[in-house]
Structure formats: C-alpha cells, structure tokens
Picture 1 (cartoon, one colour):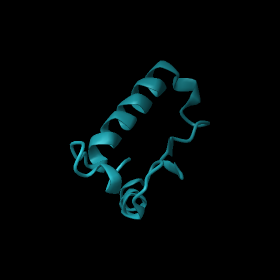
Picture 2 (picture 1 turned 45 degrees about the horizontal axis):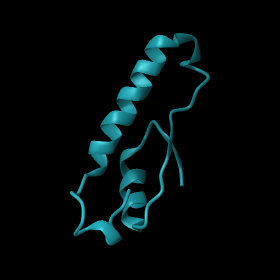
Picture 3 (picture 1 turned 180 degrees about the vertical axis):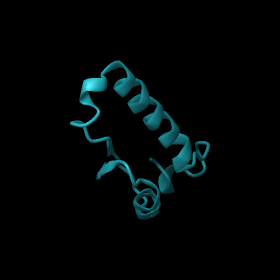
Length: 68
C-alpha cells in the first residue's frame, strides 16, 4: 500500500477498500474448498512505506494472519 511517495500521484484507497477484495477472495476460496476451512489460516501479506498502514491493519484484522 503506497502512501507517502505516491500521495500526489495516485488516488488514495482506504484499507477497507483493499480488504473487501481479500475477504471476497477467501469467501469464494472456502466455498469452493470447504474441506480447507478448518486447516487454512486467512493470511494477508502487506508491504507499505507507511507505518500507520500496519497499525490500522492490526486494529481491523481479527480473523487474518498479518504477514509484513
């Protein structure tokens, strides 16, 4: 998630905008693979130049494993 170096070049997207697609992906994945529901951790890899992104994600991601 680019923040500081792209603030004037690109539209700002809130974390919830990204996470909506992550949640949708996992919902579809588990619907198609119900046998993996109990053995697969919902995982998100995040790279960012802004420490606040990680702080916001930690507050909002209760069902995901956050990999930074």
